[in-house]
Image 1 (cartoon, rainbow, N blue to C red):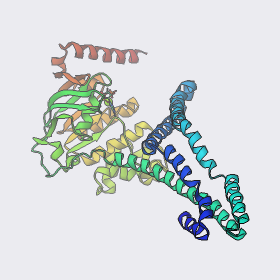
Image 2: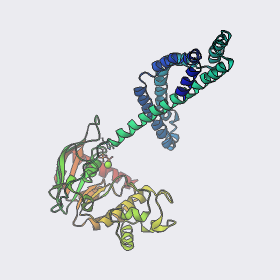
Image 3: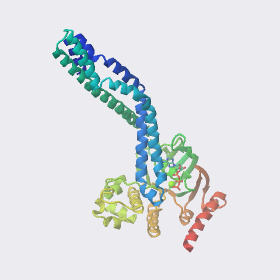
Image 4: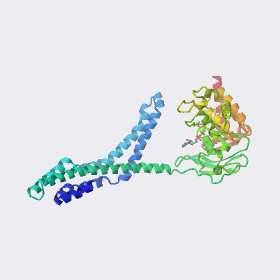
Length: 434
Ligand SMILES: Nc1ncnc2c1ncn2[C@@H]1O[C@H](COP(=O)(O)OP(=O)(O)OP(=O)(O)O)[C@@H](O)[C@H]1O
Ligand SMILES: [Mg+2]
């Protein structure tokens, strides 16, 4: 539209045409100055806005905790810092440009246009070169052109924003994917071997596991113990192949687990943080074995001591987690246990599987788990001394390193183990005394 109007203005009269668009090169120059480096700046702005939103979400989701501890000021600060950071970035960027772009915009201001076109046109009419009707037409054109330009500028801005968002999306999509196994290796037996495994949660995060090697003999129970943050859950998740190790190899029955397409029919797990997707309780239990019958699902739930509670829910097994109901941490964990019981895989990982339940049901679940664990290769992360004492092998990790392994009797000579053992039993005795 602006282009057609300009041509038409010149067709009417070249002098009137010049009056109508004479300001535009100046305007274009001002805009060119203010658009310099726009691409990178928009990306930076978009990213900083992302941080502001993330801090805001963090603040809002944590609000109960914040409230309970009266830390409103402090929790608020992360958000405030992000907002201030964005504000100063934006101000630094925009401040020098404001003068230029407002000068540019004033070139398109209505009074100026009228002054130039009507004033200049009146003079041309007085010279007898153009008619009043010509001046009227070209003045209208001069008024319309800025409107068209504004639409163009807005679309350009929108395109910049979209480009920045697209860049973030592609960055996300380019996250490396765990390689799918090309062949499907079948394990021979169910020994688990960690062979010099190191792992890090990301660049700059340091090693969460440092050169860890051990073997879980088929059909034995191994307890993994160590202080909080020592890397126990990391070992468990690597065996479940939530990620590949940085170096080293995890093998099951002689084959590397990253070559097994059917890994989850061999490895079952109950993890520390029981994640239930928002689907029915039935589907949650049958997640690893979608073809399970009603009876099998109920048996698994019964063995995990959660069937009664499920039946008390509004729709029983068909209750949708998240939509129809929430669950306590212990209930969620028992559903995860039922899921593992149903899959009945030959290798079983139990990461503090009963930590969130009361002692009474803990005892019952422990029994159910022992029944299920019979003849299986089990990796157990637990803190209860009577559980640890009875296992075939104990592995002690500290700071991501394996520091000792052996049976309870063998390890009592190990200083780190003896210390850990004493403090655990002492805590339990103190608790019992109280
Ligand atoms: N998702 C994660 N991102 C970054 N670092 C992590 C993540 N999960 C764990 N870590 C780090 O890896 C180390 C080992 O953590 P891990 O969860 O394996 O400890 P743990 O022995 O299971 O502890 P706990 O007994 O408290 O469960 C810790 O230093 C922890 O901070
Ligand atoms: Mg853990």
